Image 1 (cartoon, rainbow over the protein chains, first blue to last red):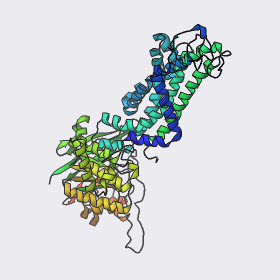
Image 2 (image 1 turned 180 degrees about the horizontal axis):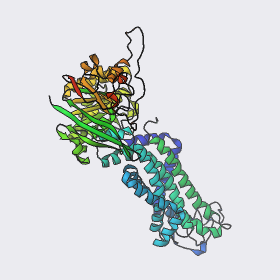
Image 3 (image 1 turned 180 degrees about the vertical axis):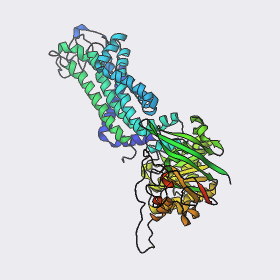
Length: 281
Length: 322
């Protein structure tokens, strides 16, 4: 008996949707480029060469320096390799923690008040201010920027998951499963989580896009990833002084951010449809 | 006869805005092995609450105030949450009213059946699969191996209810609780499910506690009947006694409210008045505002009637039935 598992079914449905497939492939390509960056560029993203500063890329073939097809920045670093390495942003851990807290709060009435009030406290800070605060306390580096972004996304995530869990908890199949002798842990992981998964994925992909933007924002403000480590937001930030001489220094990392964010958003939207088995192919 | 379920003096309350209201008052009855007991009454009379008490699945604001529920001699009300969980499924299983929502929509039938079988029988996946097929056949499902791979939304209500029955039975419980399992089904499917339950009861030697408001279903399936009104037991007897010789005015009213096609005049006689709200206080017999005989008897407004055995096995709580 050959049985297709859920992932295979989801994948089959995904392939049928052209737009989602496009986004999926783009994200995959991007991931490959980013993960295997050294294979695609011969330059180190932090090596400076002031003799070739601000040289344009392939669009200006007269001034383009061979090898640096996207040009170089104000310190003569290769833009292509900086884009590749700069994509190595850490994925948001906030998704996992947010889901965890949201599930607990939604399922256990006693924990609900405690967890949600803590979330409310986190909510009272404007997001970027909270992130700034955390980075200021912990110090400016990549890890701390990620922590800041994660904490920033926990409350909204927790709140949305809690709402979904509250709804699922009241469904009759949960009572039915409980009447068959299932334990709370089993119900939470096998049934509640599974039913909340489409919601989690949609919010997570949107959040992912948001987190990329947030990290970029932090870096732009000079509190994200410190120089000389490449980071898309940081690159835009440092390029703003050369905006008129070398606009591509802003445009190219900008395009990278936009492309990633759009792909994640579309994919998230389509995944929700795909993961609902009652929606036919 | 061996009592599988024995409910004694059960009182349950619901708290609404920090006030406790009694929804079940002094309910006692038992279900023997190889017997079907039907609990009948209007919506809101406490039928479902009784089953939830037995399963220990009352919602957060409900609690059992006093009384005991013995299942195979163990008092469920005295067990911890963890211990009760071990009884659920294995010793008592429940079939729900709405088959359309009682299965997890995101998991295949096979997964849900296997999960339950593996949990209760302690077998591995392939054996669980075999057992799942066996039980699907037992409840009369054609192409069981095809069904195992399907999702609940691909199946009709009747099929889902059969699958739920298979799921409950696969844990081999001693007590089967069915909370209006046929209400959401059309009449032909209803008939099939009822005869299935009848056959399974004989085959598995189980006890069935059946909740319904449909007297046609009662006639079809019950060995004994318990009539509830506003959280109180008003009459209990064998199906024959209840149908041939109903004594409580409420039971008589219920019988009259069933349309009879044989009569030339095709009329339903409803019971006048409405069901009391649980927050309402009624002195004496709870049925007195709607009872056709109450104005002839002063006692009905003064004291609550006691259970009397009028003939062997036939009990009634009414001042007028002496």
